[in-house]
Image (cartoon, rainbow, N blue to C red; front, side):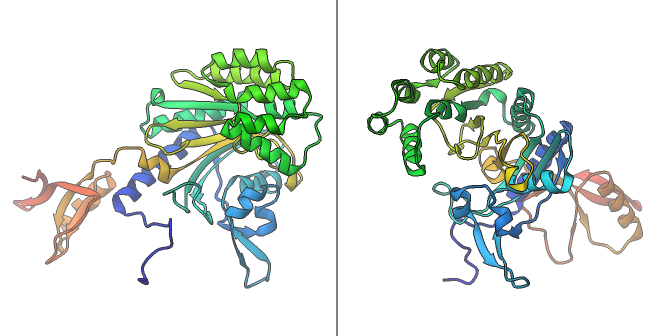
Length: 385
């Protein structure tokens, strides 16, 4: 094996794509700042018990682990940034009111979450702490969509798919199930496996069984909520969840909305509404988010939380590559007048590429469409033929 070969599902980002990713990062952070979100930069590495507190087995298996040579304690490389932001909200900021926080940085996964995916996503996210009302959920959805608009995706090209984990919890309320049985039910719902679901629920009370058997059929447009209200409305808590999904969907203008009430991805993590935003060209949901009110409990501050995240590497793959940035070519001369002109152009926002003696510049990111030419002792910018 070559010494320079990278590990599986790890890749370098070369100049043109790197510039595109950086521009997307700026657009997303600027959009979040426009909503009043404050940027935080958590560390890549933390003590393992802090990094995995309350996150569940899935994130544990995705986390690279190592031993700190200074303390001998176990450390982890973050596989998700939300637990770190929850820790920051609980212990460093400790605000009594609402905190709006955003972040952008790499996370590492022990395995790719799907074929051909990277193990080093560049995760952007935004989260609201301290408000339990639907206003925070609505703002989260609006910010996610505005972020996609800011990077050039049309709203009508996106599909927002929504669900609510409280519906299944309402149907299972009062039943005694161990973790393995609960996992099998969730798997059968996710796979829409009617036969398996019938077998797993054969001894359930009639109302719970009928509601669970109805869930795999409850997917589609807004009319699904009408059918769900008829099939599930009697379950305590389900009616509220369905009403809130309807209200959230009603606040989304110019975007398609669908529902899949049997989709329980992240059921152990989310506490209410969850959503995914799909766009053409992405292998899975480009954005995932929802409400996760329990995320801060392990840090001693259990307060409401809602947010979303996306992978900039996945985002860049569904957008057209940008055109090379225009630039000005200049000779490399030790001449004061030329240095002054180049400095003025660069301060004005222009890219000036000085051609080193004996070498032409080989660049993919810039297109030199002009050059600096001296006429009668004055340096002028002229179009390149």
